[in-house]
Length: 81
Picture 1 (cartoon, helix red, strand yellow):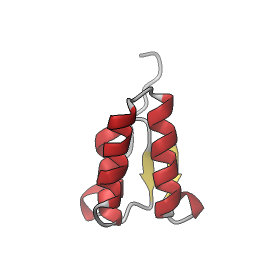
Picture 2 (picture 1 turned 90 degrees about the horizontal axis):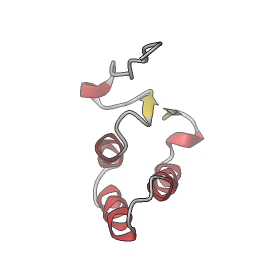
Picture 3 (picture 1 turned 135 degrees about the vertical axis):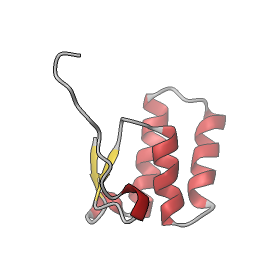
């Protein structure tokens, strides 16, 4: 799922809510979900994005990612695999 960081989806609170929802949909335990949210709240906006990358790899990707090391990373989708 694509998240445009320059729009309302990119707001830190929206990202926290999305992470909570995604963790529930993936049936993460309450403990794991709480730890994810704690990690996201403990740092900068970059920490929120890094946590998304760590916890939901390949599920979410960002458009307009401000992190210099992530500017050109996008998922590779292949047909028939």
